[in-house]
Length: 312
Image (cartoon, rainbow, N blue to C red; front, side, top):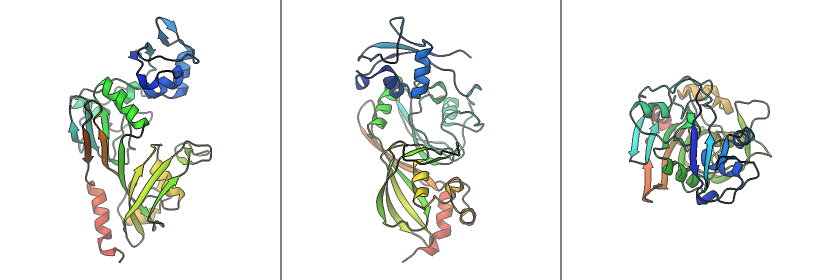
């Protein structure tokens, strides 16, 4: 497969950093991938191969021969039923992602993707980042519904990545967790990394990456709590891992210890988790945006089953 030759100008925000660190932030690739590209001579400036110890300067032009996409199959350009465009302009598109849809292609995933659906609908997507993750600046699990931002231009992509790094995008989720959270408000500060024994899961690990979750109970039901969640960091499966670690897994999330009987009674076939609101300044014009997405039908139905069991 032909590899993409990407030319980029170093933004001021990473000036002075080592090349491996700077490109990890700008391109969205892992540091391991960047180091491999450096070792193979695939990252150059002025026709000279760069070394891992090199530091970058603002305005410096760097060429990167991007790695081939992990998924060697073409992105399926299939319009996606249930995907709703919440906001759209020349720079970004914000969508309400349905359940059963991944953010982008990945090894082993054969279902629909946000990237593929938008391309099928004729949207222009930024080519920044890994080829299979075009325009994706943050992700939701396939089993999580709600709001996602996709960059349409290279400038918007770079600015949004910086905004997420600097915690300038505020994200609010709603989750239904087993049991009663006590206290009703709090902060979960526990590092997360891949599970030491089960590669498909993540876990609280002492040597993991800093992970901070803030929560507030919205309503107590007979055996579950509806919780507002705000993320200070954005680790993979962060909400699911943190609440499971406290003994309050998300309803329906059997991967992280949820009671399958309760999930069946509530007709939940996926974790009860929804990305409800995004608050951020537009990456190009700076205008403040507050965007929301209502609960999808399956979450509404599960709450309806609880409506007669609200605790006093």
